[in-house]
Length: 600
Image (tube, rainbow, N blue to C red; front, top):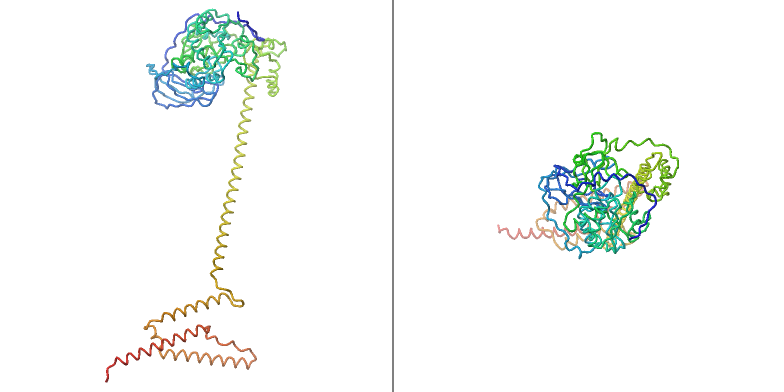
């Protein structure tokens, strides 16, 4: 006989499981239209990989995971994608979520399934990747991606959770009764991936038929089946681990750090179907119970409208609301048009007769009953005061996030205070503040990077301008140096510009000496023109002499010597040489003409 341990607190509410657990699981009819929400896990919503109008087969991937906590989504049946738009969603907020609407064609045509028949030879990493592609998540309510829980190996103990402690819910009970062999096949795959030394299957002792069926199937594999006392919430992962192993898992510490990992029986069943049959997670068992005429457990496709599921159970006319989950941890559905999600294990119909209205809350009398019932040894009355006063820092100091929201404190409170609602409010406010803080940090980082980028661009622009200025200065210095090398030597006292002009004129005269003017150009300097030039120069000299004599008579300084109208000696020499050449050419021409005339 295996020794059992106990956890603190706990309650014993009425079970109300017989109503739905008496009949076998039945298949829900195929609905004409399914609304498959893209948010099927505790992480980000999946990203659609199909378009409106696409024809898909059953089991085909229609949305891929977006992040490590996201889950892939597959087509629950064959048909045509008719819409990708926000739809009502099974969540307490009532906010719509993006969903893929699939019009079924009634053919139930499967994709080409590819199971891992050689899974015993596969590594844990390969099995994890395969399960991620199959969209397997925890079906006990947390919808945590299952492949992430297979990341640590080897383990000491693999715990399989078949307790199902929540009142009214019996889907796991019927699953263990009818499909124990398939569950054990999934356990074998999970054990291989984790390299677990032992397997312990915990089932509450109020399910004798499930215990017997699991013992028969587990004997083949060598798994241990343990009947645990019926006490709520023994189905909590940490509580069941403590019951079976005696290990207390503190808040913020993963069970794998203590060599233990826990999976729900429905989850390992889905793992077995995926690995051994190549079936992604496209359906689940749902309990229909409460104020209904035909309580039952049905296997329904993900995305099935909840209203059509409830119609199978025939709710009472006086029913006024529907809860997804059990009476202690479930939430009221805001819209029955929402499609079934992977988290939907139970639809509980409420009526005034079955669930009388809760009396108005009274002031806390600090009786301590809530502390006695808390399975994680918190002080619920103090957390209530901190949450009510919005003293969230103090609530966190008193381990608010250790609370598993089981509802045991609210159940036993004589003042009828909805304690869990206050804890959920405080957690949501803290999460919202954390999101705002992260957003502010992100905005600050973006602002700082923008300022850095502007400063960097400004510095780069200044550097470019400085480089261009330096290059221009270098080019100017080089040109000045080249000009200095080409310029003639500078004579002290002589204007460089005048010296350059004189040098140019000298070069021109030399060129004319080397290349005499053509004959035809000499005709312009005839005797008459020479006489005119000589007369003009004589008149200029006479005028200058007269001006000098007049200035001398008046006591004024005489004019500077005539510079031949600005013509210097070099130019005068050039003119004289040109005139001499012209005269010589003219004389030669005259002589030639005289020789050509005939004698008269």
